[in-house]
Image (cartoon, rainbow, N blue to C red):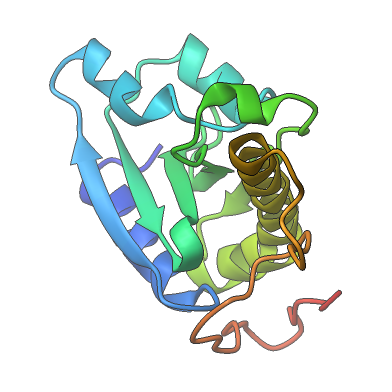
Length: 174
């Protein structure tokens, strides 16, 4: 693990600056074990990130806030120095609207912000946006009793900027 808590803070800030759209980063340092669950209980992942949160004491984490209510959770990857885990956070919608929607799950990324941003933009954000759209559609249907006309399974990204990647690491667009 990086030796200084600011390593996660700097990484999260650099990652947010490189993601498509406008993203901000909020760093949280934990002085007590229970503090790690303020965000961790919102992680939308039943895989690697869920395992890390439930099995390790986390000294800190970061929350990235992006377009259309998208939120990401960033932690150091346990047992893998220089790597991080990035996972979606659940939208602030009643839990019953998650029924039948697969978790978009998080991913492990390298400590290099340009490469990490390319991986998040290519592998994580499309799954996250699809899951968010499904939950929002289910929520709207539950409120009105009818599907929302024209609601698609994709979220538009406002202020889309290209992902900055080092040469040879260009993300593939779907």
